[in-house]
Length: 441
Image (cartoon, rainbow, N blue to C red):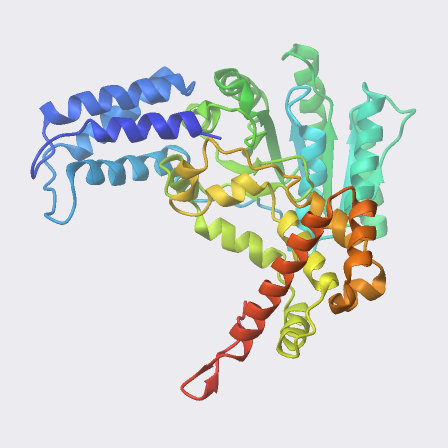
């Protein structure tokens, strides 16, 4: 995501020369290259031009402090303007109804149905809501089936009427169902088309007028670039939606949609999808995205993801086990599962400041833990609980059962032993005669 744009901007800043002041002469070449970088990223031409004009206006004549270089000051100005271009600050959904209703819109293939499942999961897990998903796509039986599968995955019920071809009736009946059964959030998935047409717009407008949703979200595939912005404009002209959702930002996207869409439709980006997993959904933070575009990482989002998987009771239990040197392979595999839930490994690593550029050409496989998991799952319950009994014959059996080698099993056991020793040292270390405080959320 944004890798090419990040590289181009980085090269642009290196063009900046000057000793003490940013002048019209030494900034011209830099901004010319910045504009080219934005256009190559499929940013709307008018948006790119306005952006560089604004940066130029703010940069010219600024005094450069002795502690920083002109290029560093330019990075700061570009960062602030990038964040402003994408909306400035995060925008939350506004849910007031009883039940609150969210209406999904977008073209077929944009990821509406998958996003509906992710959103239901987000509100259930993080907000304590009791959501109901509604299968309002009456043209694709597969869409109804897909929503039921997603609902089952996240533990959220799905309302559908497979024999009813009237999406307005289905939506109204679903809201009645929600009121009767105590659901406080209704998420209505709707039909999409391969292209915008009058019939499609009339239909979704009729659904909107019938159920009066608190929020209308427009879901767009970020990989479609500038076409996504044009589609958003047409939908907004008809529906006056409340916010945008960008899906597939983990793919090979140039990022033009994320940078252009706010300026063109004047509606905030509220969520971004970053993977296939139901947890792969983030609230959109313009400042953090600007950090990532400029290679500064996103440590705040990384910490937030870690905290989402944090269980205070589990942490206390583990601390006691570590102090008694009882940390075992069951605990080890549990920690791996928590890391995997945080998202794509390369994306997580790129959130660490300075790491993004270093790993851009390195392929970090999401299956990196697969062989470790296979080895641990090939152990007996007794072996996982008491690793000290893992003698030579047991290791041979584990290697055979996991499809690995004895050397790989030995390496994992050695790493586990070293990790356990280090964790015990950290837990029992004393500073000034007192134990170090344990980590808290």
